[in-house]
Image (tube, rainbow over all chains, first blue to last red; front, side, top):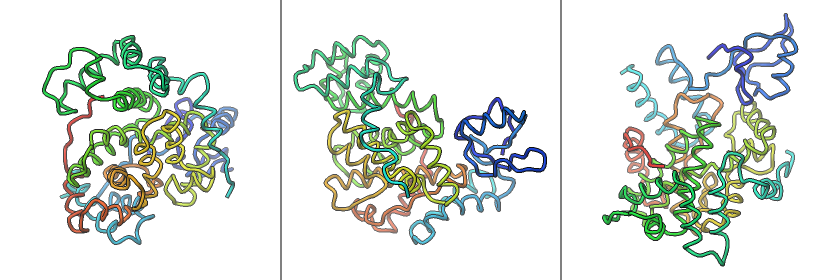
Amino acid sequence: MSKILLASICEGDVLLKDVKNGDVALFAAGTVVIKKIIDIMTILKIQEVEIENREGSLFRNVKELFEHIDKRFDYCQESELMTKLKYVVKDIAAQQRGYR
Amino acid sequence: MSENLITKDDVLGALRGARIHPSIPDVIVAIINITRSDRASLTDLVNAIEKDEVLSKRLMSIGNSGFFGKERKVRHVQEAVVMMGWNNVKMISLGSTIMKVISKTDMRLYGHAIKTAQYAHYIATEAKLYKIEDITLVGLLHNIGSVILLTYFTNEALQAKQYAIKHGVPIQVAERAVLGVDHAEIGGWTVAEWKLPDNIIETISEHHDFYHQSFHARKTAAIHIGECLALMADYTGPAWEKINTIHPDAVKKLGFSEDDFRSLALKCLKKKFEPIIM
């Protein structure tokens, strides 16, 4: 996650948390930012937003890492081959991140 | 589903505009036009390349890198063109230029193209495919359709991305649902417009929808698998970016058993590759 100034946001960024104006949620988490959204936030003088990290996700522990990999693989979970490959990726990721 | 939000005519109209891409230099436009023409000669091509010092140096350095397996030193652009061939010169010129464009607009797409090229080449080598010198270039260009979408149809591309996030599907599935066409097909139209060879057009068009009876199915299988492995290797990528299923027929088409392929994939994902000269 990264909290950035509105001036740094780009079209295509994905909101990580709801953007609120007071108590009213304007744009939900998971919204892809388009020019119109940037314009609205500018008019409403919203200073900062939280977006998905552009350089890749950060993990606090191996559990978070594995949950993230599960999500990336969830469209192909019915394939036996892909399930086996998912475990290969988890092994490599855990080693690279120093969890093993 | 809204059909044909983007049509082939829309894409070709954008490509045939004043410039192929706002950031692509004139020399590349000239090379594409020369290689599309039935009347152009080798001298026309060499003259066009020599006008661009950076591209000339790049082609010479690739010619001398051993990439094409020749030991004799290349000293002139003409020698490089003769050695590499008409189509490879065009692809290297396009590949290197487009990679620069991608690196300026989307670093993740750039990294993905590099990884796909490396993995596809490794898989093709292990499968003992012949004539694989262009696999790396096809790997680099395989998502040219995404570049075209992001450049000329930004709003539509972002709508597709939103659909992918909402429905938890890979981007090409979202593109088909929202736009009526996906980046692979758009990429195929693009390289067909640039008059690249049929095997390149087919490989780019079908890299998500592997069909084992296609004419160039083995080359397509290598790109299809390379692309899936590249997504897997990028495990820190966003959770909404879904990894595509490797088609079992693609594995079979390359002559691997499932067990062999699994250990090959492990080796491939762990391998540290040499940087691609572009």
